Length: 330
Image 1 (tube, one colour):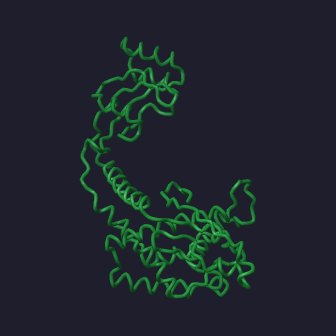
Image 2 (cartoon, rainbow, N blue to C red; image 1 turned 135 degrees about the vertical axis):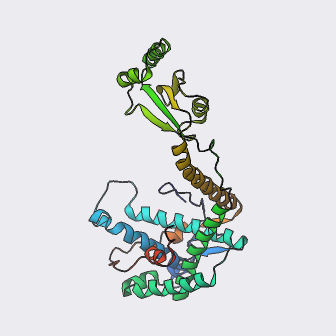
Image 3 (spheres, rainbow, N blue to C red; image 1 turned 45 degrees about the vertical axis):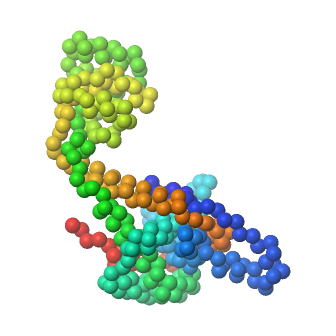
């Protein structure tokens, strides 16, 4: 499974399905392929009908992006728009199905109110489709309910895993420093600037003419630079100056304006906690993926195509999902 939009996706193993003996064995060999699942995660199977619901969801999302019909343009890319949204569909659904397997093992289930909303959402979704869209996805109300249930369970597990982590973030972990920088792409110039600073030249004055970066003043936290650079920067005290530091082929000298900015540090705690919670989910997800038997039926998925004749005027699956399950703003 491919990664899309910076998100973690399930790494599915390709399972080869052959039809070499089907032609003489049955009157309609394609029907045998169409009954096969798109992929399996553990004991859970994703049907082509379910996949088409999400594929049509992405189709609508991309159909009129930027106010143009995206399907009528050739973008000169190696991967077509259809291939791209098919990859998105498969990747997202593999992730959802995997989270559902984990939810089942951890005993996460729907509340009575959530189950009621699932039923209502499925009905709303199907009632909104026109005849051609219903024919394309071909899902029953029960199948639509199950798909909404899967997404709700995946989100519940995601939130559960996040809340299991330590919510306390220390000042040191979230610390934000205020620095001044002199950057140059020339190593000899950097050494010359350092010599001037060591001789008593004011850092700000020199930086105004010597710095090749867009700004002199920067805020730095523990993830701004590589660990070895961060270690040296966070050892500075107010007024401290570093030696010349080579970072990604460039040369830097830093001056510490403030080793600890209380206001910025407090604001950064939210980002640190979000990253910690996201890592907890990713680690659990990766751990289960290494244990689960996952198979992708590429021959089956290749039979599923995007129908560009659909009007797509009804609410998409995710629009209905948001209607019923969007989190209220705090």
